Image (cartoon, rainbow, N blue to C red):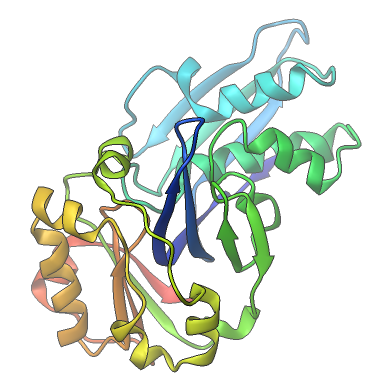
Length: 274
């Protein structure tokens, strides 16, 4: 079976509270994009062989056995039995980008194995497994636009038409941003108006005034090119531009396909309709 784990962007990101368990509560809007990795899995020749993973595409960091895909398979094996697997992950979504690529890979392998082997987990049960792998993993079970709170696992659906017929451009500096360092730098605060209220009641061209990413200051200091890419998006005619997640990818939302500057072309990782 082959599945295609998709990326997401964050429309705004607020850090609202430091939790007793060391994590942070957040508020954000997750929005899925048709920008995907490819993940194939087949049964091992001997069903009792240990699971194995090969990663191609974008150069990966770390050992395959530490990849979230293998960790997700192990989590499922704690709950149900199924044959040993050979897995091939072709990475297209860059790591350290704030696009949720690793979390999406993990969620999609949970869904794929559950479907192929009829394990019988419903979506809520898959989400409870997914949250053990990453705070944004549960979003990728449904893959529907959502307001997210808590660690990112409390999801409320948004109108799917929010970005319909809009063109998106993603650009990324070569340098990534450490999610752990980004969270350590933040100062939690409770917003006065919920993010979904602002986004759903305000034209996209006016989001710039009120939709922010709390990691911006830290990310801009670590990699000034992030701010430059946002500025370039606006020069190209973007209605709205922001860094996604903890970075370092930047997205621009346009009415139609824009003419990109040389700098945006140099750092382009994806463009297309939302």
